[in-house]
Image (spheres, one colour):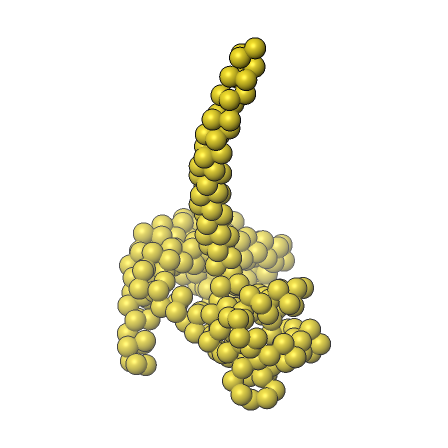
Length: 274
């Protein structure tokens, strides 16, 4: 079973990666444009420093090592973004100008936090779309949720069932309003306890006691989307009952109207006879 779960997770992961290929390409393209633009700008700013013969050749070589060539500058910018950005920044701050500290702080805040976080959010959204479109994954996650809910319900039932007979009577059910821990359990199960007697009657099947199965089935019906379904079902039942009552009343009125007409004729004959 564990191996099957691992393979299912791997399959879902591969689907997410396959669906994110286009996003990955355009993300890398955007980062490449930003890195090249920032790197060439810094390289242009330090070009005069590199050719200044008044500066010590050792210092110029150190700056040239990071920002002297296109490939070196591009690699430096990726180090600034993804790796240890202190050495490339310190080279310019110590040898060229301290104003470069402001440049790197702004660059790290804009690209390192804003742009990368947006890219991460896009990847997460794409992954969620793939997961939501996977029917097998949805069914399994729903089953996991239901199993976890049933375990919580079973734990709550055992906490309330102080007698240990596998059933809850009204006396034991009243503990739900008195015990804060049980109230917290009900809150986690999304069950309101404002009407204790109504809740007990809803879960009770007419025996005056609630079994574990009745408790599980009842709480599942009370919780979440099932309430909307039950309200719609109740509305349809009331509508059908209303239609039947209208038909019965119509038939009753028709049956009562016929004798009245028969009684009206003798009255007319008595009035006309004089």
